[in-house]
Length: 239
Image 1 (cartoon, rainbow, N blue to C red):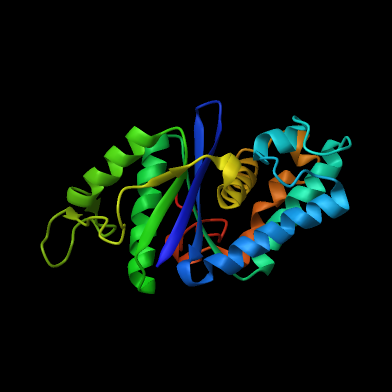
Image 2 (spheres, rainbow, N blue to C red):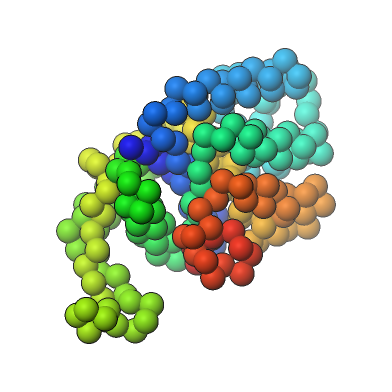
């Protein structure tokens, strides 16, 4: 079984990124200890508070008192990239991301790919989201469990001749669960991954000067590239 931790990053409500951070239930304890150790290292080497929520866009923009000393944007950028490398080096996480100018289209596309990938890998999953969109996400997941027409990429499904097929989210267990990101290292890490993708897809000069537009490819070893084999970046990003 998988735990899929979901978070979003967006730009002016015009471009939306959703990232699912996937942890096998059998490895959850190891993954938690790895993230706890990461935060302890950030404390011992960077004076960053262990219990302080690290919100990606605030972290990158230099906002918030995150440590016992001032940490400038350049140092934060180095720490940000290091966090992503830790996620890769643990060998305990996988990533699926979706981007679009339509928020719910990106969300639904990601849910479908999560479902399909879980099926292919022989897993069921529990979705865990940041708080804030409980009613909307729950309603959509429930609907997609019953009615979820998927268009054929060949124009029609060969066995039925129909343009769509009802492929429900049968790998999802229960309704989505919602956690305050302040109390979840996993959701905070998903947020970092989503923000890195946002800055690659929608770079801004002030962040690119610090390398943020190059950070998402750090995650290449753990992305499910098969989620979109036609992704021009070769990173499986669902578009």
